[in-house]
Length: 531
Image 1 (tube, rainbow, N blue to C red):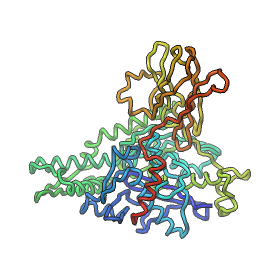
Image 2 (image 1 turned 90 degrees about the vertical axis):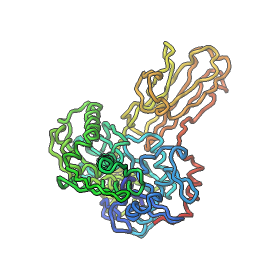
Image 3 (image 1 turned 135 degrees about the vertical axis):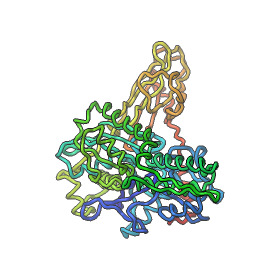
């Protein structure tokens, strides 16, 4: 049985955890003895430094630094890459370097090989972003058991000791670069997602950027120059902004000194001013809280527990906003906001191993068996996630307008498989265009959807046999797995004997690395030393 870990692959920090011999989830410290590792990568020839040292060197060598990689996951290598030593690195490859660091440090700490992992993603990640995360794990040398939603992991870490105490848990997850709000139901033996929504381009970095912009404006007013024109000054300001934000969580004011081109501006930032600068960001998170309650058809009175997840929830303005809209007292220390997701992922990794028929449970420590396995040999708790977006395709209605037909509605329990039949619209129709979409509403007219291609997962042209009458059946099958990756096939259903099935397609065309490119990346990155 391989050693399994849970990993929170974060925008600004990453964390790795395991289940110890006593059956308890436990954070694995890195070689620097820190419990969290900055998600920052520094290139120096064939040496790659990940974590605190890379972050500390961002001021000195910003051109050799890559950070906030998570926000680029799911993009093609054409749309986002960083070049070092004449090699272009995709988002998956850059993220895999962070995962390699975590894997290496864990193996040293545990004194054993780490083979399997559950890696978390924001619940609102799309298909390509999830596939990119799995690719990064593969490149780093992991057998990725599952790509798990972060709020689900947090709820599992909290709920594993709450089974039987039926409650609705509201998970407010504001990390460094992404935001999710999810309602989970904890019952006798199940933790189930009821509703989720989010914004994967909203996080602590956006609060930092408000400070950076404000200080730069103050400098320009005083000196007539924009300090953000210089990459080194920008890095200085970014680190100072993070420090000021953290300081303002404890104090009413923070001093920021901006130096550029031999000139200096001192800015005393009051907490009140900081909250004023970031009102729009807080409002975006507030709106999503109310939206997810509407989607669950619940009110705040139905919520039993609020969990604050992600380091950005330490900001007083965030905590006060949640108290204000919910009318409830919250305990910001109910869970550790930096660590709870990784701990939950480690628990899910163990549960996945239990349900794997190839693993013999006697190989597990007795305490692990006692805590997670029931008398019937099944896990004591099951985790049920829901589809976080509608999944559908474009069809012609009776008026010959192109509209969206939803195959898998949002919040359908995963994994799932759904087939539906459609009819040809013309006599002797030769082809059918199948456009697979994500995140659109039932009967939504295609022509009224701005930036339609951003919702499209793939397409194919299904060739049909000659001579079919109008109204001939076409079957489309959607298969959605635990990672919330979609596989779509389509076929013609005709009644002409041995040629009844024509042209079966798998039609999702992701911008991520394909299987061959992932394998090549594994080979290429072996030339690098990661520390």
